[in-house]
Length: 337
Image 1 (tube, rainbow, N blue to C red):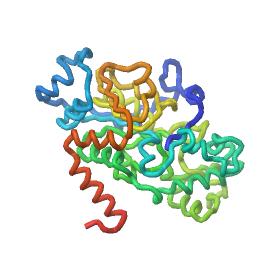
Image 2 (tube, rainbow, N blue to C red):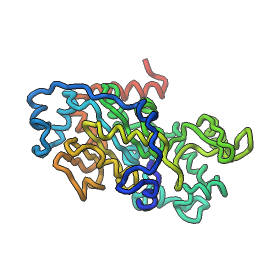
Image 3 (cartoon, rainbow, N blue to C red):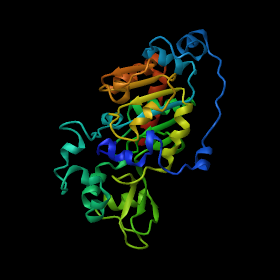
Image 4 (cartoon, helix red, strand yellow):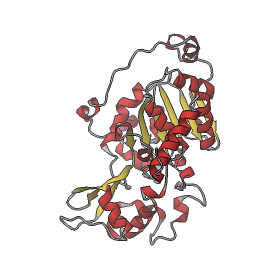
């Protein structure tokens, strides 16, 4: 569930000229995650897809080509960007769809305007509207779907470098993708912080109060406990800086279920090298892929679940996917053998 409904220019205030980050560069943090690239021997078919000598003048790629690059393991540093569209099949509305989006259905909350529900100043004044919304997002109310499990399978096969998500619903974690592989660009409910003394607490403590219709308060100073999701005007998590390392070294970029309207997240779609294929699976053509396409782009528009299932079929992973979903569903229902 993507946040940040403000116009892009408002969020770009955090970035310096030319789109480079205005934050302090924390080299030691990034160095912990940087890694060298391993040499890969390609088959003749894959070499044809990649082109000879790394030339950027290559034939137009297809979904079949992308599947071959993944299946043959020619791409082993796959970066993924996802938005609210991957969670709507799990029953979680996005924010911007007319009529069905969250922003179109906030009249039930006592707020002066839709975006106020994610403004820190309003939260401190009256946290109850946000807490009422948060209760509907409780992780136990929704389950991952085929898109989440496809990304989990990509991780299990050792080809997922990092998954960048705008969502705060936690379904990526629930699918079994480890936190080390996630960059939750807009934070998560996995922890909470006191708005006064900055004491942190596990998300379970926050949820215990929310599900009991109580305002979570700090046991030390009685300040309001706020989940560690990014409200308007707050800085992105430190882990977002991993994009400085991840995107230049990626060999494939997957973009799934996002409007690419929210900065600085949206601009990451252009951070991979021009020779790197980009696959967009989405309801609509969006962002830089619409107004500044590259020759290596592949676009699959329409129902996201159908598109992912088609890719899984081309990869030859259908049975593995069914087994994974069966195992994970069994863990939830208590029927896992």
